[in-house]
Image: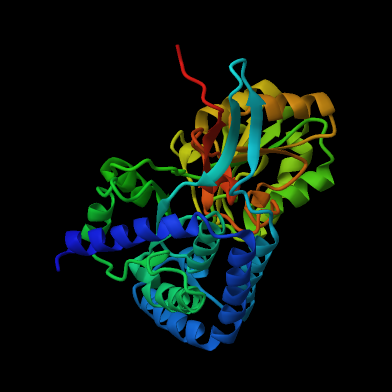
Length: 418
């Protein structure tokens, strides 16, 4: 069996199983999810052993520490994976939710109701928790899922998938409700992306290169984000202690993720008071600063920023800094250089905050909070498939509701169109 035939077999099974999963009750799905969570905990030794193989290979290959951090599992991270599944099990089932209902003049009753999308393919890279998060969310929303993880996490992903798939089979869920593409051959991805007769949606998670390749190659609709160039703007009416804490958290809490701050904007009127101390704390934490000419005047050790720096997603200990004249300039900079992911204003001025929140064209906008909260679990969604910076059909953290579409159910009593 060649790669194309192998992918067609997987996709056909998924398509067939999706008609079963679409009609499972919430109680059935929740029981499976609870068993999945328990299975992750009871199988953590197997999962950690597999993860150790991936970590050894990654270190021997000289991969970046930020990449290794995303790849690494421990008991706490496995517990978090299990907790995400439990939280998803407690959320309302979106399938069957009536969005709107009405009656038209001819007597037809029309109901707009949520339903599963069908078959969703997830193509992702280093994070093994994506395997459990995506499988759980797709299953709860009534979809079949085809998972294809990166080669760097192949052992971890397979171990997690096998644990969860055994639970599905135990509950007599048809084969194909969840599938994992075991080969790391990229030709398999290219073959999968052509199967629009069986697969309804593709969601890539990973680096910009992977996502652009998926978008360019796919015959199937794609929801994605290319970069996470996130900003924090410190307004002239900000609480500076709060601003400092938010900036440190947004950059340092986990630098290698898409919702970490990559550019700090500061109002000119408070730059001389705020930036020297802020920059020193970043320097002490090992952050390299690329700053504008004004920033460099305040700290001679800062490297002068280029146009390219303001368009860079560092995913590590580097940060762009720019002093702006006013709120309008901050908004213009974000809309021009940002990636429409997550951006925050620190201010006590309600009008300034509302202006920022309304005019910044990003999926998630914040007042007085870290951009690190852009996450399905943090938003109370249980987990997430990813963060979408698209505007159709989902935007921001994608969880249960975003993994459904809708249909119109029309009830009549013999009406004919004339």
